Length: 138
Image (tube, rainbow, N blue to C red):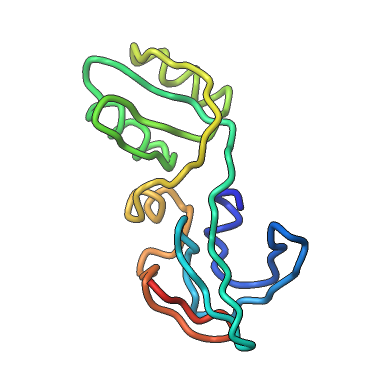
């Protein structure tokens, strides 16, 4: 599933093998690696798909991260790089701030608080709790 699909947290989803499942609120965001237990007892693992991303590197990643957050752009922070969904406007912004930007494809899992502040999901969502038709198991 893409990051945006996983942020919905409820609704109908298509599984890898073609089955369709429905997840009722208050499921919250579906994080990579989460296991859902369906009402019929089947287990469904949430798997993040590879997405087109920008890898951001630079001398001051913290300053670049602040710029992304103030622009409302969700990012994933790692020790030596940041990752954002690929977008030409975002790429231009980052280059203006002196970042080295490279196109990559890999799963995208931004920090929960960063995603919420960037408008990517509910601010109070707890990915380890839930209920409804797709109960969560950590």
